[in-house]
Image (cartoon, rainbow, N blue to C red; front, top):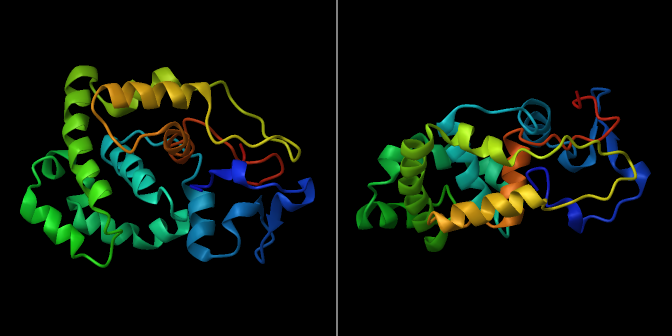
Length: 203
């Protein structure tokens, strides 16, 4: 999960928080892997306003489908190098040679459908920015009411707003933007804050 397609987890309340060796209590899912802990502490649920970083997060959520988020985190710098820092203007003009280069790059997830989707979505991103000013401004219409996840809350993998966002993007020609992927994106970019009550990173 980017933290979270966590509806698949049936956890007792006592298992939903974890106190690390540093004495900090966190959501259980980041475990003790230093990279995952930093992601939990410094990124997940923190609002991102920069469109390039938002596009990156959206693309990486698509690559994560069917894989663990930690796998994507470990490859993130490779992804950034391979996709020109996820600059949509550069990625949108990739052609056959770039697709083959990416398929040969062992540092990323070599999935043709996801690679071609990223190129397509870069072009759609430019269209969205031209029409709405920025991706950040556009996603604000899908901001859900604040959550307050307690130790006994039922976890969710989608919400009505992520379903609506998915439908809007698909209608505009985006791909790999299903409702679960969009909810993970909303968590990752801070449109929702699903840190658990008792987690020291919850505001």
